[in-house]
Image (tube, rainbow, N blue to C red):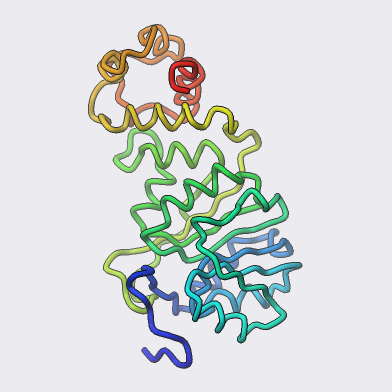
Length: 264
C-alpha cells in the first residue's frame, strides 16, 4: 500500500493506520444523535477517520496527535475545519471537557488500557466515547462477571461508563497490519458514576483481589488483614468461597464502601 504524502508508521509510537473507509463509516455511524456535538479525535494519524468527522460539520473538531509530523500534515490538510493539538493523550487534561464532547479514536495498543482507565475516571460525563482498541482489551472492558476476560480494568471502566463492544476489525484494515484483531467499543456515561472521593479505595481493593483472582475472597481478605472481613462479605451477600471474577460491579462498589476507611 502506498503512503502518498504522509509519513510512514513509527513502531516506537505503536502506529497502525486505519485504511478502510467502510470501517471509518461504521465508526461514525455509532455516534448517532451525538453527531452535532463537539468532537475530539485521539491520534488522527493519516486522517482516515478525520475526513469523515469533518463532513459532520461539528461545532468544534479537535485532533490530539503526539507525532509532530502527522500533526502538521493534519492541520495543513484540514485547515480551519479543525484544531490540531500536538500533545500526548496520556497527559491530556480530560477534566476540561464536558457533556457536549464526543471523544473517539484509533488508539495505539500500548496506550489503550491506561488511557481509557484515565479518561473514564477523570471525565465520565462526556457525551460518548468510541475507540478502536485491541480485541482482547475490548473484551476485558466489556466483560461480565464469570467470564475469563472479567477483571479489574473492566470493573473500573464500568464503574463510570456503560461500554459495549460494537464490532471486530481484522488486521487487513490497517497499515502496517497488526498481528491481532482489533475491536471498536462505544460507551456512554452512567447516570451516577463512581465518586472521585472513593476511586482510590476501589482501585486498591481491585488490585488486592485480582492479583489472586483464582483464590477465594475469604482467603484473600483474611491474608490482607482487612478488619471485619467476614462481616464485609456477608453484608454484600457473598460467600467466603466466592472468587473475584464472580463478583458483580455493584457488589465491588458495596465492598469498597464497607472497607473504604481501611483502603484510603
